[in-house]
Image (cartoon, rainbow, N blue to C red; front, side, top):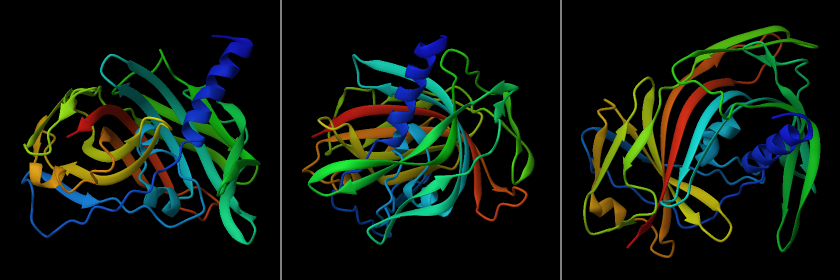
Length: 297
């Protein structure tokens, strides 16, 4: 891919990442009952904020983490499976938040720092304007440019279970050299994309994939807007390739939203990285993400 075609493709990926939004169904209330011995389950907290968050199904970063961490080095291989329609892409994104962007007295986002010439495995990443989306109620949303972020399209080039290295010589933080190993290849067998899942039965989860920590995020999905909202996260203690979600828990999911996406995440993550001259928390994560879109009845 070359020239303007590459720019258009990268811009499309960026818009998928930045311009997604979140629906607001009722939160799921969990009891103290342990639903499954091999899975740790918890409600996903969606903070009450004016900052528009990146969709979990393409970033594998939960909402609370998006606000707690200020800088991100992400390497993701993403598959969307809706049954007859399946598409995959891979990308890397680097972003470090700077000063807040405010609109009508409220914080709506942050400027992205200039990190100089960022490279991934020696290949220059594309430096793009960081886009901040401002929700304006019934009026059309506004888009504001605030600093920079870095993107590299890895579709067709991404390799699972391989070392990757980000490097840069930055104006204010000196030399950056941060590596991580990409996650293993992930394939989801159940629930299959496009399937109908009964709330009255236990749901068997089956997947293939090693080389990382496995979690599953259930989100409501609006097929008209393509917007999702994460509700529950399951963490696999053993990554055995199979687990069970009881029907009792499925029946607690909001019935006014029949469509859901099960986001399987196989990830290697480091959140103790310190960048010279940068005070915010830094997340470095490589993830294989597989989204199965289903209907709950």
